[in-house]
Length: 70
View (cartoon, rainbow, N blue to C red):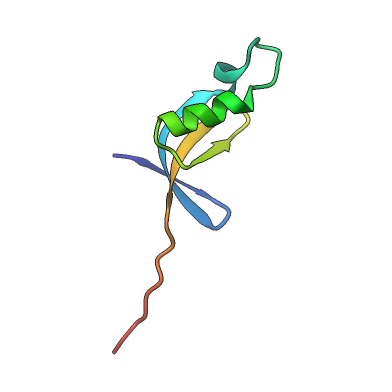
C-alpha cells in the first residue's frame, strides 16, 4: 500500500523518501539540490517535499472536478 501525504491543498503519493544527509556532500553541509532534482526524475517523481529530516519524492494526485446530478 502506498503512503498518501497531504500538503497545503494538494495530495501526493509518496514513491520513496531519503534522509536529507543522503544528498549532502558532508554531514554538516546543506543538500545539493541539483542532485535532489536528478534523483526525483530518476525515481519517476514529479515533486519533492522536504521535512526537517527527509526528502519525500512524490507523484501529485490530480484534483478531481465533478458535478452532482440528480
